[in-house]
Image (cartoon, rainbow, N blue to C red; front, side, top):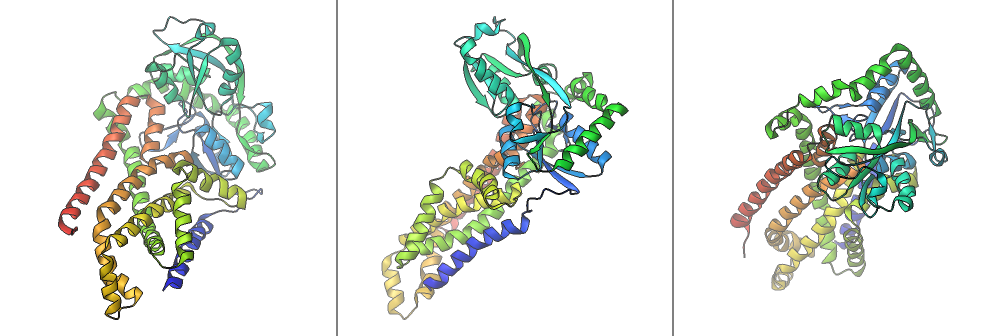
Length: 482
């Protein structure tokens, strides 16, 4: 029996690797018909979500138009800038187009396209602030965006101006921090700040002169996908000659962008009506990821629980090591390791959905294993002895005597773990999974209605979790025997 448990556990562990192999794509450097690109879908004029759930912005519209001209397809992976850079370096995506500044330091790692936009860096403060010169920021806190050239320049200027720095993953979070008074200033690309002020209504004004004018380009890992760079450069030249390039810039930075945002309406109900498709799509992803991961994790958890309560020292050691290892690693670190670390180490590619699913399964199965163990040990030992004295085998005892009682005992804890797993899906936004939280982030980047949007996202989580909690209470009252 113990050998069968061990074989089943090892088989399921191998199954997770097989899932990755089935869905993976080997890394290649030759020309292909479809390219996966990391994009900053929360970057205001350069990348944002539309009310129908599709994407728009300078970066996304440019590469879309170029792909059509040059005859290839693109798939977008919305990621925070720092995560997008990691995705390129690990081979999870073919390139990145996310308002990325072309610098000499980055050229050591990436090959860049011809510049498609340029913008300078500028300081900003709250519109009601008395500060008018960056030198007045001494001793004050300044918000920056992680991994950007703006962050690097802000760090270089820190000794001169004497401010402190707080790092964020996206632009809306920086402006929200200034609006709430936690940060006095913000340092960002002038084009992004102009969009945030004119279109998003961010309560910020620029101070000082524009500095460190940067050119933006699409990037690929050095030596990889040179044909993509060549096609981008050719397509960009054609767009400029046809006038389409100027039209794309005007749509996203001119008056048309402001009118479009104002037309959305600012009320809570109007905001939901405008973005309900994107929000419900994100909620659907959250729910199916939760259900699928918890079902598979249940099988793992049962096996781990049985191994933890077996008489085999080896099985106990394996299951204990697994539980301690998974529970001892933060979920976000586990997600990064599976999505970025493993593919880079073993030269294969995982989609964000598969990586997210594996992350949730591993995490939930460790906790479910302990829940199953506690349920088994809660059953009186005398019943096991009585079953053995009646001639039942270990497997028969577990199947007919112990497990039916243990499952009743652990049902509330099992449903509670399902709720925890549902909330854990929000962390997977860091690897580009567009679940409910990520959908909210992307929408905020286009309208900067963070207060209302986060209230809406929280309400959707609350409704779903309340339903699960009531279900848990119902099952506990009707099926839990004491």
